[in-house]
Structures are given as C-alpha cells and as structure tokens.
View 1 (cartoon, rainbow, N blue to C red):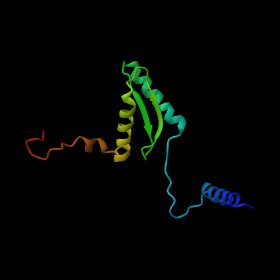
View 2 (spheres, rainbow, N blue to C red; view 1 turned 120 degrees about the vertical axis):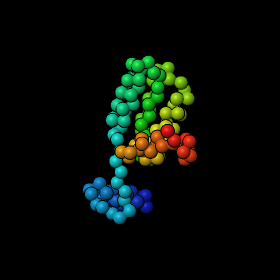
View 3 (cartoon, rainbow, N blue to C red; view 1 turned 60 degrees about the vertical axis):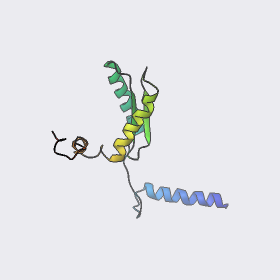
View 4 (cartoon, one colour; view 1 turned 90 degrees about the horizontal axis):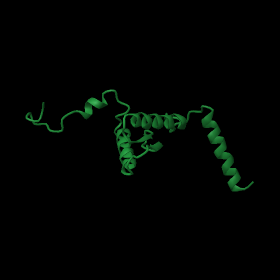
Length: 118
C-alpha cells in the first residue's frame, strides 16, 4: 500500500469518526447557513430594495467573515460590492449579529464630556 492511499484511509477514518458523533477534545462545532438559504436571503433583499427604487448589493457572511453569498442588483455601483462586504464583515467581526443589545451599544456617544451627551 502506498503512503498516499494509507494517508487517505486514515483521513477517511478520522472524518468518518467525526461524522458519527465522536467528540474529541479540541474540535469546535459551528453553525452556518446553508448555501440555499444564503442565496435566498441575498435574492430577497435585493428584490425588496429594487421595489423601493434602491440599487444595492447584498452580502451574507459567516461568523468568520467569509462570504457565503453575494448578489449585485441591477444598476448598483461597482464600489457597492466592496462596501457591502465591509459592512457585513464588520458586523460579524464585532459580534453584533449575535448580541441582543448590540444596537444599543452602537448608539452610545463617542464623546464622554457632559456637553456632548444629549
């Protein structure tokens, strides 16, 4: 048996063990949207904005900030592609999408002087 086929067999056994529910120390389980749901989200978002007359780009990223789905609406400027990704990545990296009080934190004034507070 060659080294490559032996290595592949070990890899298959490890992957098979992980798939059958073997819990090993050091493994992390994450949740991710399916590709179908991510595509549906961007499609519905761009369609809803187009009905209101907005030309937008929709991006879905996972919790690591990796793009899962992207859709550029008709007439959306080319720079919207990058801007939409940067906004989605920022939300994912700050963890704002997971926190129920996230939007309250973003509304805090940056100035701490009493004259800045409203």
